[in-house]
Image 1 (tube, rainbow, N blue to C red):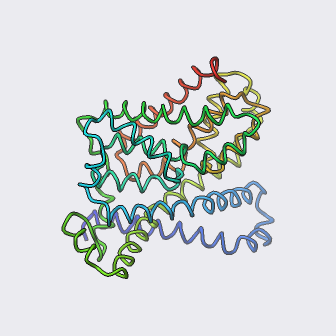
Image 2: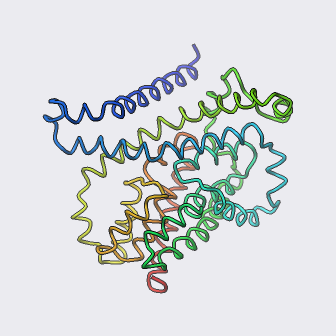
Length: 350
């Protein structure tokens, strides 16, 4: 057995073990919580189990949406199609990528596999990054949930949307400047899973065969790719959700809320909250509104913009699919851009 194959098998076994753990906790959560063993555990660990299940259950529908979108892109979108619709000028292409994020209802739980697949299909790295950070915030579902959560303070709604649009372009431009000469930042080992599958469709010739195949065959191929993507994404989602549940349970929020009145510290604290809590962008506005009495409006905007762009569970996914150096630079860029922009706006709009 080759070392690379051993690594793939090890990762698959880890993924299956994590998925099995989730299924056990989900199917037998009532029995676990009422058992004698559970009563002997500290209540905090029961809370970890509850938060862990809620994060995963909240994210799974969007993961499924993302992996099916990724599978359809893999089968039916060619490299020529992507290049034909993207502007040839790298700087001009940033704006359409941000606008595309306002159309597709994808949250941060689903966007990673879609962006990875688009980049593998020929989308430039910086354009994919713009879409990665813009789509989880600018989509219609998030707009509606934020409108409802802050219906008495519409400034936060429009600041969130406007800031996300502008920052996504800025972040894409910065990363384009840094990785202009090294655009290939995908990890090579993630190709092994799909490449070894007995049904693999890629490239122009394979695309022609798919078009000639029956509807049943096309559906089967889509399902094969979606299953591969789901198991690949699922293990990182579960690992990230568990770590996020630990932080949500054992983080001393009362201590952090004591510094919520200062513009700089409150913005930093709410960005830390957004990263650690790893909330879905469709629901984070309701959590943010609950902090309205303790934190400034600017810090709430930072929470609503930073979390969908970068959170704990997505960090695991990013490290799994992109090179380490790129992910670290991406994290630093997003953090500095959001913090700086919110501080600048705090004395002007918010």
